[in-house]
Image 1 (tube, helix red, strand yellow):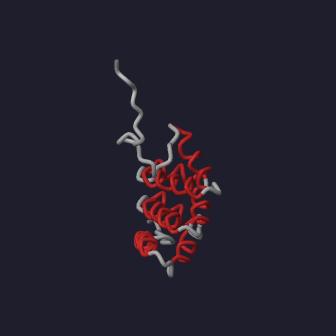
Image 2 (cartoon, one colour; image 1 turned 90 degrees about the vertical axis):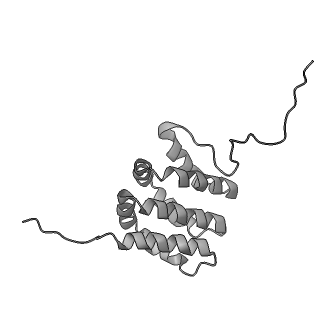
Image 3 (cartoon, rainbow, N blue to C red; image 1 turned 30 degrees about the horizontal axis):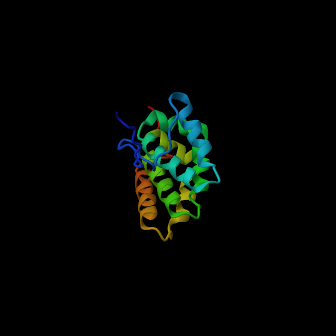
Length: 147
């Protein structure tokens, strides 16, 4: 007779560093709630999952509309270096999309990011500089006259 054995190991297709994501329209609002969690592991997992989602410009647009940028500004000042690192990575990825760059200007992300110029973590400074480099290529404020 066969006996059931339960392994202590997680299945190979489950990543414990990522938050479980809701489907459809509920995914980003749920992550936005988790970014505000007082629990460190919840914030870290939400940021890991958000890094994957913001590669899609539609998700970036929805995230900006939901107010993610205000929460991300707050997380830039977090005591945990992993939270700051993943926050700068999310912002860097968002800056690669036009809608993300517009959101940076509207929500004053650049002054918030500049607070990390002397951050002790190298990757935070590198992601911040990458976001600044992309933002420097945006001709914001350029007034074109149509003739």
